Structure formats: C-alpha cells, structure tokens
Length: 192
Image 1: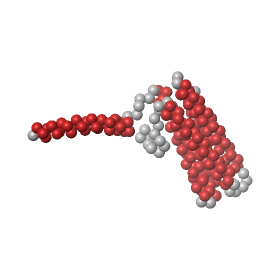
Image 2: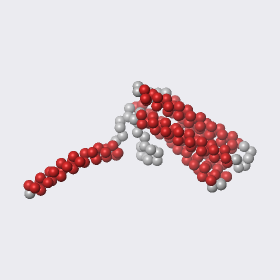
Image 3: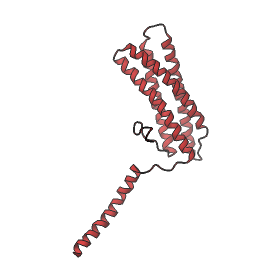
Image 4: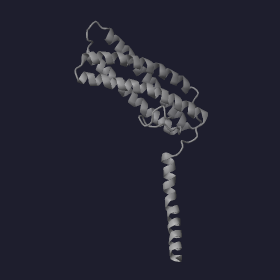
C-alpha cells in the first residue's frame, strides 16, 4: 500500500514538473492576447480596417486574372469595374490610415525607423491604388468593346504585388510594436 502511495506521489510530482512547460506553451498558443495600450489598440483596429479593404482588392484582382485565363471578356470587364471601385475605396482607407499614423510614435530608435518604413510603404501602396483606379478608369472609358484585356490584367497583377510589399512592411511594424494580429483568414471579424 505504501509503495502504491509512493508511486502515486512520484507520478504526481513528475507530471506537475514535466507538464508546466506544456501549460506555459498552451497559454502562449491559446491564451489571452497581451494587454495593449490605447495607441496599440487604435493602431490594431485601423490596420484591420485597411486589411479588409485590401482583401477586397486582392480578391477582385484574382477574379480578373482567372477570367482572363478562362478567356471570358465579359467577366474581365465586370471584374475590372469592380477592381476600379475597390482600388478607389482602398485609396480612401489608406488616406485614413496615413492620418492615424501621425499619432503613432515610440521612443525606440528601431521603432521610429520601422514606423517611417511603414509610412513609406503606405505612400507606395496609395500610389499603386491610385494608379489602379486611374488606369482602369481610362481603360474602361475606351471605345473598344470589350476593352483591351492586357492593361486590365497588368493592373490587377500590379495591385496585388503592391499589397504584398505593403504586407511585409506591416508585418515588421506590428512585430516591432508588439501588436498581435491574426494572419489573414485565421479569424473572422465577427469573432474578434
């Protein structure tokens, strides 16, 4: 009987010592998000709003590319109109985000450089979205029916490429400022 009690005590101690790293790992993976200060919360919210606008641009760009590959001129034209509208909306969202970035600051020299790089990335993204909006507007206004698909295709690819470059700068900024944002497609906005 004493052996059984002794064995139980040894097993309990071994599992509590051995399990503590697992519990810590689970807390990191499944635990609560870290507490964010008001600036971090505001920035996270603004980033998510802009990200939603960019997802729409990316989705419509992909639809346009698929339609071109499938040789469907009507869908290409329709997708180009939708992409023009999404690029216009994204341009407005980028402007709002750029205004919000004026209030973001840090005392850390690395943080200041990362924020400056991110702001440069925002400016580049805005130029790309403006170019997308204007070039699609011009292509769709042409008298050709249906419009030439090559400029529409190049514009769709350029807008997606600009989003990828922006996402890299965004990731570095969020990591540096210690703001957790779920990877795209991980959670719906409803569950946040």
